[in-house]
Image (cartoon, rainbow, N blue to C red):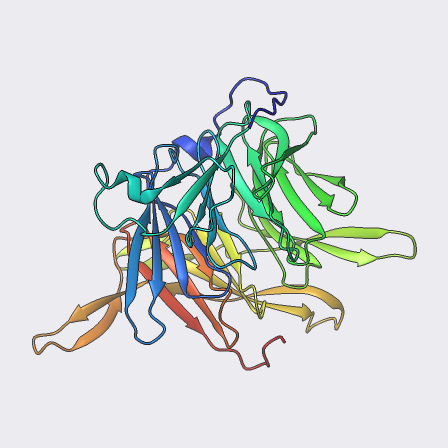
Length: 390
């Protein structure tokens, strides 16, 4: 891509140089049991469950352009298209080798002489880059039917860039300010939420590409965010803070109005072995994208995952709107074998959760994948009393 955009000094956000974990990001496929993990060795691991057995297979995606991975996102309503954000651009992989004419694509098969076996046998990669947009921080796909567009954010410029993976056209969305750290596209395709390093967030109307700006307290920026399935609210947390915020949409007679509310988080300590572990500062949040009844929270330097109940009606006031209530904490479990070979679960020690994501493919209940800093992935099943959403 040869689309120059205005940029200041190449700012490298601390999200790039303070991360010491092996696993940098995870993403569930929209409708099958397939989990992508970005590793610090510049490799993406694709884990896929065999539908006929409890077994999982693993294949790799690797390319010389895929350096310093920061984020990844599966394309909605697609069989196997994965966008991987890197230091200088975005690698878009098609696992089923539907090669686009004119794309700068490279088959993983061409690198068998330099990469260990295990590469995905049919994947092809197209590389998208705009000069000046380095340090890709977040990617969001347009979920609209038949759309082939994703938007990339960068910590080096306030300009977002929208790419069409079929036409290979790039369109800048220019705004003044510092770089951006986060993007989230609403499930209905009508809203794009962006959060900047300057402490401001913008909500883009994707029909008109106009935006509404929201300011955070000085020195704070949004750390993590997730949309509700009905696209009427987005939950988010801010750097160094323990409370959650909800940006909710209500329609007035003349316009769409967005309200901000706050939910107090856990401010306690828990006993983990002989240690007393403080919890509270939020690192990452994830919401069940189907039933929207559970919110999971990962904390900084904590061994537990916080769980919240989410409902569309406040049980105390009876008013409609997203209501979030703490319901408990979860510790990781490790598998242990006794003297006669029987397997059992014991509390995991010496490891802390670093990433979590709900599977979008589960219609009954929910499955939460939790990645720990010892590279163990655990799966937590949720069963709901209420009826699932249609």
